Amino acid sequence: MMHGGILATTPWSPVKWGTPDTFEDGLVPEILLGAQYGQPLHFWNLHTRKHQQMIDFGDKYQLVFELRPAHDPTKAYGFVNCVLSLADLSSSIWVWHRDGAKWAVTKIIDVPAEPAEADQLPPMLKGFKAVPPLVTDIDLSMDDKFLYLACWGTGELRQYNFSDPFKPKLTGSVKIGGIVNRTTHPGANGQALNGGPQMVEVSRDGRRVYFTNSLYGVIDEQFYPEGVKGWMVKLDAKPEGGISFDKEFFVDWPAPHRPHQVRLQGGDCSSDSYCYHEVCAPHWECKLSERVLALAGPGGAWRRFMASTLPWAGLFAVCACHASQQRRDHCPGTAGHRVWSRRLGRGGRWRGCVDRHRGRV
Image (tube, rainbow, N blue to C red):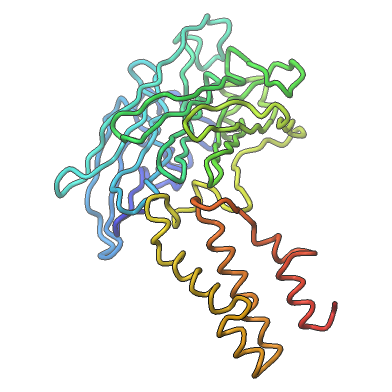
């Protein structure tokens, strides 16, 4: 969503692959080669609730998947990945942007397929003698600087610098799993790993990147016939660019379960879109938080008034103070990233405050 509008890919499936009957039992080769999976972008105006524009990527581009708008609402652009080109099995990244009064898309990255012998490939790919990268997820850091690409087929996670959204620069890459390579992880004790980077999540400060390796149950088996053995890993990301494995973080998932979506307790870059780097300091919520802290903090006018009239009502001033501190601490420009549950959990500041006013401490 951006600038009063919303966009999505079609057909009307919320996951943007196609209608349910085209993927519930796995990808259908005849439908794929017939260019019948999703390839357009649709734009709506949320104020008028009317469809504004459709952009068709063309039959050659199949499975237009994930939408990642810039977090900064002053930036009228975003990114979307196309999983497969029928021309050469490559994946691609596109930027949508304004072109005068209309929207437009521009392809900015091609990720090529890798050659492979037929006996190394699953039945679905033997005739192609190549491993498609299958970029099935992307994620954008909160400052809109780095875009991460999950290459589920070739087993690679890439980091690009997008300071200029039309001129990306490759700044980091790690390899793990893959249809052919089966690259291991420093914490996997030399075990060959299957699956590949799939669902990606980035912490709000941009320093941690998590990903898992299962796409969709029946589709997993099409590309990894022996079945995907689940795992989850973490990368350390440098502010200037560059990524590396956290050697101590390798979660071997208990069979027969497989991991997919990642969500971070204190917020993350794909679920949070209300705080953004360039305008964080003057952002009205941050300013309001500072004001509430001054009024509700020790010695503040709210605190003094409530304590003098209704002593128990001081609870609300204290909690307002903590809430504002929490809001301020969650902005990417600050050092703290405390979590609501820590405040309300046992031993947390809010829980202690509540318990004292209820006479339990």
